[in-house]
Image (cartoon, rainbow, N blue to C red; front, top):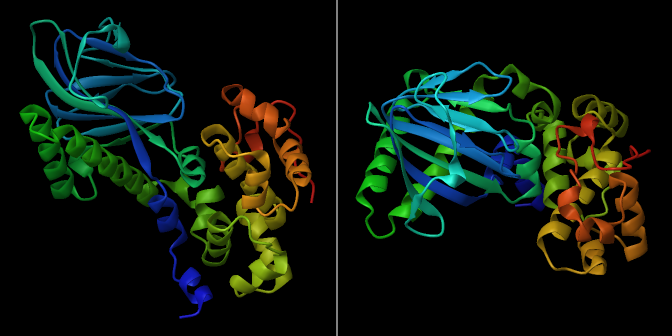
Length: 339
């Protein structure tokens, strides 16, 4: 089979979901009794999840209506959002990391907290997304996603997974923490899939572009092989469109021209490399298709407003662009790319 046929068989949205490769920051089995309250801090680059296995609690996120979570309900809270879990409105929350917890492993803990009232059991945790496409994707999600057990798209599967997770959390058999964290990863992806299937906003912007047959194919090609010497004509050929029709369609769906997006995407991959790898600038430049470190450095600074060396030295200070929020660039000194 010709390599281009393999590319064309890819489901672009499925490709993005496949790249939601998570690394569990932590997973906690919580045994709570009313009255109780937990204050959870914002954890940079992590998404928090909460699954109620028995009892109930209220999820409070600033700027959103209070949400009642009951057995089988699952909620995701996007990165950067402080929130609270309380037994009833008005309960005083205690900072999560100030409470004593039993460490079962580096990634799995047990929390017992509250008074002498009604019991609630939950599995809570945080997952981190490593791939630039995944970070791009997560940046588009709403601040809070809730899937109620009563209207879950696959309720039997969801309920069975939650029951299995609860049983593993309680039994603490060898390898139990690994099973729980893997199941949590699956639940997070299933929750995102449920949101994608029903949310009108998933049909617009970058997510909508991924679901466009021609533009989505081009996005996958760029994401998979950003170092390739792509031209507008080459991308249009892969999309089986004329150059002019493809250029107009890409700009309309994505919000920027294809060649501008290519450079932008390369810089997102570069930022990820600089934050997480020990590669030299020349190596990063080469891996992204630049013939010289100088050319790469100019493109990086033009896109993100800071030289790559300075970015690496103080990466945490730079809130670099996540795909889907291209109009809300916050890196200091950023100047929009010019065609």
